[in-house]
Amino acid sequence: MDNYITLPAWTFFVLVLFAAVMVLDRFLMPGLRWVLKKRVKKVMDEVSSRLDIEIRPFQLTRRQGLIDQLVFDDQVINAVKLYAAENDMPMAVAQEKAKRYASEIVPAFNAYIYFRFGYWLARKFARLIYRVRVGFFDEDELKNIPQGASVVFVMNHRSNMDYILVSFLVAEKTALSYAVGEWARIWPLQTLIKAMGAFFVRRNSGNPLYRKVLERYVHLATRAGVCQAVYPEGGLTTDGNMREPRLGFLDYMLRDFHPEFDKDIIFVPVGINYDRVLEDRSLTRKLDPEASKRSLWFVIKTTLGFMYKTLLLSRKNRWSRFGYASVNFGPPVSVKEYCDLNSIDFSKHASEQRFKHVKDLADVLMKNIGDVIPVLPIALVSEILLKNNSEWKSELDLKSQAAQRIDELKTRGAPINISANAYEGILTNALNMLIGRGLVQERDNLLCLNPESQTLLEYYANSIKHW
Image 1 (spheres, rainbow, N blue to C red):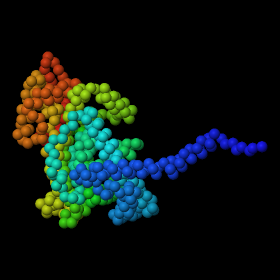
Image 2: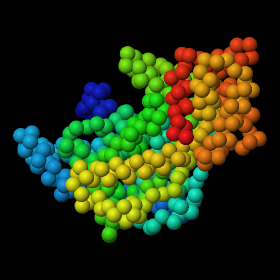
Image 3: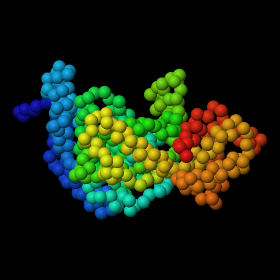
Image 4: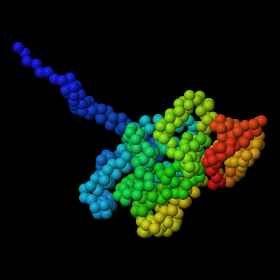
């Protein structure tokens, strides 16, 4: 008589699942890794031939290797010892904290995801809701940057769309590494963002160990020539004006910079502006100290509703509703030339004096950014409406005032790319956008700003207030 071994159903399924995992790990995964590596190499060979600023070996180093390099950096080890002593904890515990911080910060750059998926997604999304325009851009300036120099794009921060827009526009020139706030540390978004070469930053963290790990990562990436994108303002503008620069990141890059023998750091000013900022109401709402905090459910519901309405719009209406998104690139600023011109060596100054010099450089960069922020139709029309305050004006009168303002700005050298024969159509469309959003009132063929929307109009007008 045959003997049979019976197993519970759950045990059988566990064994089958285990066997499937083993087959996948031993037979299928090696082949899949080979295919992926082949594709990544193909992408690397393709993009390397056309990039003005090549991808650095630092970006292609195994992520664990970068984490180890960061954790065992001399300055990080000293910070670990100090942190352990101050907090009365074992060295091993403090070192584990440093390792966790390093793992949180260090990106996992993947060229295939960046140039195939990320570039495609950024291009599609940006063009879906905006008419994207690049204004001033001198290709020779980037091509003439010294080999191995660290290029840092410094830009104003108006919207979270800035990440997508600039990455898409410079993808033919280089691969950017961003500093991203904690808002993006949600699965699976954080995995995608790290694969795109971005690194996470805890804003306003007072933890000295964390700040040292972050400082050393920025220093190592800068010395390795990684092309980075930095917002000196540190956060989104809530009133439309450019904010005072925060000096932390610039100081991380410059405190150990030796102009005599280090490779140069090149800052490229970037000015960004939109006819409509997707978060404009949320940002201006922060100006009201009595405004209550929105619930997570409200944010999700509003976002999904906004996306649904956007997808239903025709291409013509979408253009009318969101208008232009424009980016201008200014002339590069060489740190070596700046140090030579001003007789400065950042590495030789104590903290207080060094920060003063960093602030002076930051002010120069902020002015250069302001000089190339695009002047867009909505900003112009908002300025004219505010100038007329609560007076009712004809559409012809408002457009006439706006045309005069355009000519004045062009005379002053403002970055405005509107030809004289296009004034009529562009200004009409801008007014229609504001009327459609309820920011402008209509009565008897006359127009006037909606008093309830004054803060929002000021937000847009302030983007060109420095002119």
